[in-house]
Length: 436
Image (cartoon, rainbow, N blue to C red; front, side, top):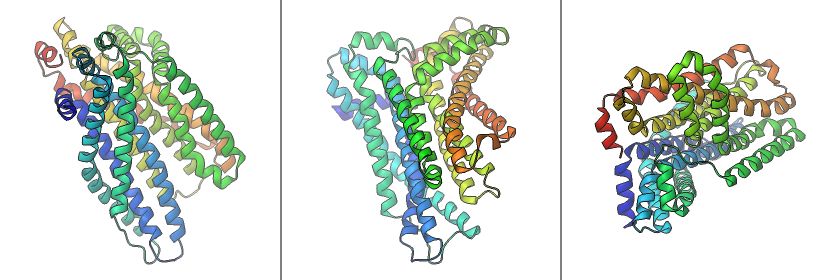
């Protein structure tokens, strides 16, 4: 029965399944490549430079595993929230909380198992590109050959299965314990759920933990402080992810007076939509903040390092590309779930240009929230630790700030508007029926 419910859930929301599948494939890709480099370096014969490559591979592996767990949990939470109405209806006709949780767990497991071989294949290609780049820059020690074997496959499998199960079950716990009538009322409005007190307290505790980690890294040696920067950034981003709904509402409140003039009616609708859907939008704010924070940290590190190291540049592209793809994937999921809302607006007289304008202004609010939160996290880490490692924040050129802001805005607007091309081709009444 549980498997049947999982299949029916996937059929009812194919966009949520596709978004989760894409995030899992991306995670498996980067984990496979990083583990392959680390294991290949560890198994190479002793030679000058082998230890450095091995340590670099382990560092990349550690950060990408943390990133993957973080990202998969966010995407699974969003996917489960998008199916809140179906879960509430199942509860209303007699399904127990344990059945809802088992349904989500079964769906997460099946999605992870389907994504694993695809991600492993792409990860093997990425590892080969990585190895060839190292070889071209003279960074491959003697006797070092690339081997993408079982360790990479098992590591990717472990990250995907454990992260998807934890993320899905934790997200389903709240919905499975809510009364069916309350869940149906909340799901009547897309993103109508409100963040609870537990999430707020967790955000405060996560922020305090991130501050403590920053202080501990600053108190250590220069080498330890430099190595700890990615993990300290992730700690701050966990706090941002938990505080996402409040960050979204705060940004909407700040942007409201600015959008009333140039935005007109579309700007008013965008502000109202951002406030109402703040909990869902937090899933998009977090990966945008992730891209921004890591990009700023890497820009600062590279600006103080003289000639940029190829591995530093590759690592920046790897982290930023991974987070950027996840952010785009999340924004596409958020836009696709709004077919009923857009169809209703068109049914009462709104034109396609007005719908696009609303989405564009919402994208501006989302980009400001994500880029702003990421910039705050990057500064909170790099001001104390950058001074410690000799790469102060003041060394970051103005073009890096402008490039980060522009990239975040373009990413959000493009990912939000791409699905509209297809959605606006659907007739309003057909869209309302299809999304019921």
